[in-house]
Amino acid sequence: MKELLQDSLFFGVGISIGTFLLGTLIKKKWNFFLFNPLLLSITATIATLLIIGIDYQHYNNGAKYLSYLLTPATVALAIPLYEQTMLLKKNFTAIIVGIASGVLMSFVSIFAMALLFRLGHTEYVTLLPKSITTAIGISLSQELQGYVAITVTAIIMTGLLGNIAGGIICRILGIKHPIAKGIAIGTASHVMGTAKAMEIGEIEGAMSSLSIAVAGCMTVGAAIFFEGLI
Image (cartoon, rainbow, N blue to C red; front, top):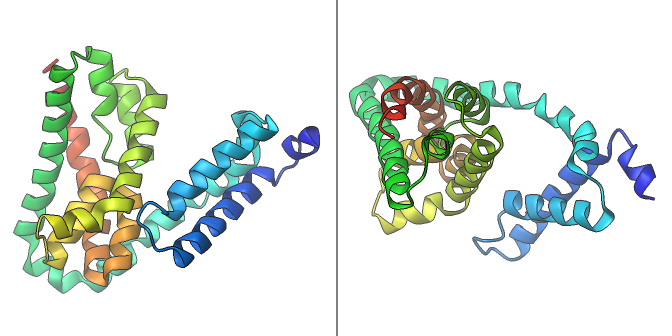
């Protein structure tokens, strides 16, 4: 059975989609914030691979085809932004300042954590791209000579946290304006957070989509300065 599954071209795709659909059903039945479809899917996929004894390479031979859909899916995020063009023009300055503030706080928090836990330079630069998309984060981590695998893990965990708790944190902090919520979620937790922002509302989703691109560019530029602090 193990050999049959790991040699199957569609095993990775099947287990990924299947666990996500299962997570979606669980979320609908028990609307608890920890029952996030992405979190449940990742947990169930890892558990299945460990139980069956299939390594990541065999799993990824099929699952990698899902990655081909990431680019068009990310580009499609520009659609809700286009629909909110007038709102973007009207609040352009506030939006840019908001995104810049989010990027700055991301760097400051990593810098403070590095000092607190006495991280070395390599560990420090590894975590700097935690709040941007995986594609940009991997390239930036490689450029800064960080641990790429840990960077990817940090990006995924940051995105999951934003997807699970982004809306809750906004309510706790009293952030009610749709533009502010979208910018906060998108800047902090990239595409995964944007998926949640789109569930909250059209404006939140559009502003979060914008934040992904702008925050990515700002992070790449600012990383040159923050890299040398440790």
